[in-house]
Length: 255
Image 1 (cartoon, rainbow, N blue to C red):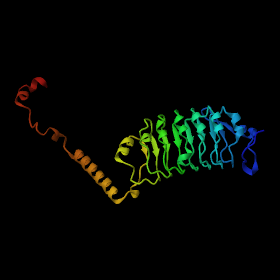
Image 2 (tube, rainbow, N blue to C red; image 1 turned 30 degrees about the horizontal axis):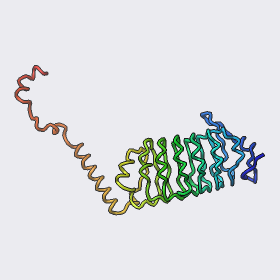
Image 3 (cartoon, rainbow, N blue to C red; image 1 turned 90 degrees about the horizontal axis):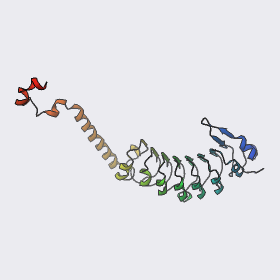
Image 4 (tube, rainbow, N blue to C red; image 1 turned 90 degrees about the vertical axis):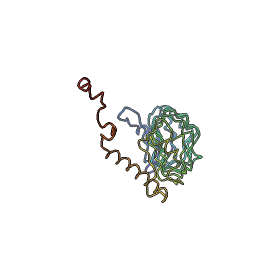
């Protein structure tokens, strides 16, 4: 039997143990759930279960993901959050069936994200939050099917425009990053204002001058709104005090 990391009380993660951890999801997918088992190394024995649809190795002590993970060609859902991973393998780009990838709460740096991520053409959700990223690879902008991107709690000073312009992006979480300005430039704001759920900087984080500008803009908007709401409808055609002479003479006909 192939052996790998240890689980609770020194239990070995063998092929049989892994096989018994397979669950069927509500939509009929096969999920291998090895979360919270104290695994310290990627269990190579699970490569024999390469036909699974979902793999959960979250909340363990794993430091390295091997290139062999690409054998999971049918994998649609991969959860590696809350481990000690500092680098993703280049082979992850071969897992083109992936729709969901969660590697949050690890030790990933910008150099630990391979360029090959741009090959995940079908992926819809990527969570890179709670890591040590000081920049985001612009190659993520090639993932046109992305709906959600998590970049919160990192060391980012800016967000690439290529990500903000993703055509199907609905949610972008950039909270708790050391942005030098309230949130990049006006051009950046314009490119992402269409998002349904965008996390921007809070008022308490704005400098005095920027906060004043925001307040003035809001006051101006409210003033315009009040003017529109308070203007009588008949004033729109104030110049038309009475029907002209021709219309008055023939009003019985056109009525």
